[in-house]
Length: 357
Ligand SMILES: *Cc1c(COP(=O)(O)O)cnc(C)c1O
Image (cartoon, rainbow, N blue to C red; front, side, top):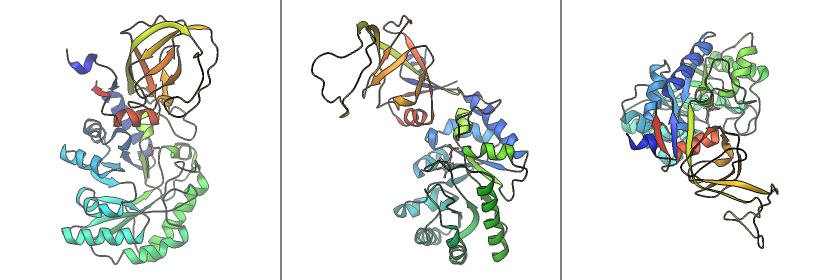
């Protein structure tokens, strides 16, 4: 037997379920003429997963980190690669070397990309991101026209699209009004400069409700999807999207201690390992199980146990649970569903074994 089949903590990755989700979303959005960019950052640009996305019909992949994109390219993944965090100014050489397109909001950075592209004898494509209220990245709409004017004359740069990102920092809904506004902005730019933009990228997994309810997608022709492909949900309400799997990823952990103990620590209470002063609910004597996994492996607050047990807390290397009515013994496996933060952290942690099925 393979070590990765038995050793914990491990994350089990069901490539078939990811393929199903990717194909289903591709068909759904494609039915109204919207292409999908597969966002790989939550799985750290994992090449096995990227390969599944490409084989499921997604030919554009985006990641926020050059390292992840370089990894996918090295593994021979054939896709158009987008850097979807505005470039770090000191990385422009790497950006143009390893990515085809980047999302941008700063003229000085685009000028840096232009210099790097000229030096490398290549053309780098630019999507300008527009601020529509979420207040993370984006040019103010009133600055867009002037920026376009400046970048279309730059050497080594091709202006290929406009995009926006909502529901990430400010939790702002990509509703009909915002999407119509984006379409209007794009129409103006296209008319003014006599262009047809390849990308009008209207958002992310939070755009699902808009997409389902809208009668007219306007100029929007692309969405950048991560969470809905991997976890099968939209992200405004975290509602399950029909016909998608929500359990493509499972975290498997193992009981390393199991004893009947009090539910409230005894002695003088001071700070815990993370500087908090903990409070505990008195549940009397309980079966406390310790799992051999902790905050260095996964964002514990993003885990949901698949058994009827309660997570009481965690330290760097332990999760402590109230096993309630479950007879949890040393060596037993305990499985969890993961939310986005838990998935991101466990895919990032070198201590969590990745097992594919
Ligand atoms: C992370 C990210 C996405 C993907 O978001 P999901 O909610 O995972 O679909 C899309 N666009 C940008 C700019 C992002 O940073």
